[in-house]
Length: 299
Image (cartoon, rainbow, N blue to C red; front, side):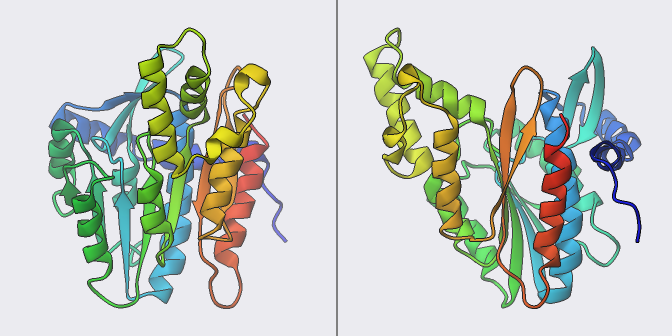
């Protein structure tokens, strides 16, 4: 029986996957001259996304007639990440969806949503065969286009990546996708949610701003239950909000797995892998739990 890799070794493999595409990333960057500046935590997210794309495509391609990749916040396709004053150009999640799958296990269609017209134009240059939707992912028109692609052929499965920077993703959009036969990887940014939540109760914040923030939080959670959490001014924890969100996801995908990714000085975020059960053995889900163990053991 092979020795179980340490968390550090596991992460080395994940980072090696990303850096293995460095030459390709630089080539594409020279072609479009554009990359989205991101923090170091994006490196961790991309490593996890690449890992799950590989796991997903191997299993799904063998069990369904057609598999789709859907990215609701696709960006420009390339990320510029600075670590210790050194900048690297790395493939974003959309390009990883094209590059990572093994031969014969590729996605049948890649659907990319990006609201910024300049980033959407770059995406179209980098991934000309993909379907690029230049619109807000929460708009009814966008969701209809996505659903039409999903329902176009029987036995279609999909992997949806939802990676907002803050509270841009409305619960109504999440629910539309997670109630269907497909998997979703959702990035829950604790800092962004917590900041808005704290400002609602801040004595220094203007009332008009508080009203807007309350509306944004209600759209993000899909209800007013976030108000049931003990306010931060009374010692309440931001994790109460995440528990609420995660339990809502589990109402539609019982096998959802929360993964906590920790950074420096207490910074952390949660990635939710929302999956449905498969027939027979649950190797698909087991792989997620193995990744969870490795990810949560290291900063």
